Length: 496
Image (cartoon, rainbow, N blue to C red; front, side, top):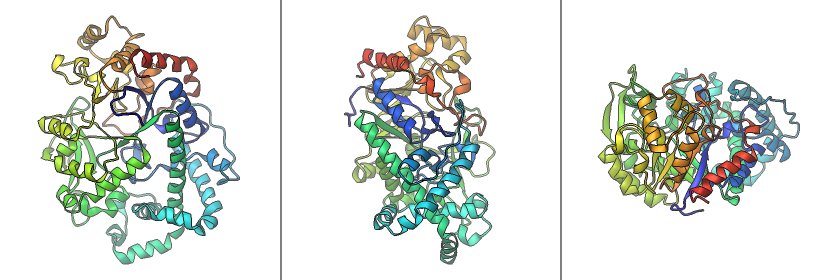
């Protein structure tokens, strides 16, 4: 792996956003060809969003399990080529700009069930497979959780009609385990397939000089096996319903703030148990990725606490987080994890001190840097070596969309910083500025390299559904000419 001080360039594009023959991008052939594309472009970093199984709204940041992989990313043709799905007959999927999650779910479920039926007798007799399943302490809880969700019509565990299994009473656990045994084994099998394909892709990427930069949400979803199986570590009442939930106050993205709804941690209880829940999460991320971006890093310094049931985030309060004592344990127990801190938002002195203590690179986002004068931490002049710099992130508008929608005062600030730009040249200049900056790592979303407009942004914070998380690259866009232009940017900025 390259040194943390090496100047590197990268691209942000999620797995599901890749082109390919299925209704969403997968870990199959198109992912390998994208690695080849990155290598030819001189890019050494491929950043993806969280890769866990998604739920309502398809947000990667609201996963059914923070440690599991998404079955939707398993490549069916690769299963067929490996002899795990011998009767696979793909249905033609026309190229589309957006992921069709609904069609994807129906198609994937059918073929993955077929794969399980084909392999279950063989795998149940293999000691190696049993040993593989046994090495993941979270796996069985996740598989049982998913099987019970299916049993209850995919309802949130907060709405399961059987109180005994909601509360994990031993007799109920044993009963559902026995009744749903095949479904539990099915969900464990899917994780085996995901990890097998993921490990193969990561090895290929590393062999071709590309690091995988993953994304780890600070919070876990309310409707997750993480909360169901570890209720004592969250701020829940006796009925195991959230008392306080996460979010952020009013900011650039939302005048009412953002009400995420994730249960908040009981940090004192986590501390008393050696932060084991968190150490397992970090260790699992280190097994998936070369580097890990911890989303909402400021929540470790101070977190925003909102009463469960509040209509918006305006009434929340800041609470002091676990801080340096937590990261002292991280550095002691999981020193192998290479962390990037997403330090965007309400950065105060406590956040700054914690970041300095950890030594992790923070983030700079150029779109944020053209207002507020030279004191703005995202101003190009304030970029430092130990940071990861972006034109924008998955939560931003595309740079072209941002430019078209920003005010004239901001446009004048852009021109003072970048020169006489217009609709046709501004995005290229923004990318060049980020890559030419002092930041050790420079990244732009694939939408910016393709000069795409607002309709192709990945996510609009504070909204559900719509086009969120559906963006998809078209295969014909990843041309040798684009790779050559990207390589030139890397060459000119000393990143090759």
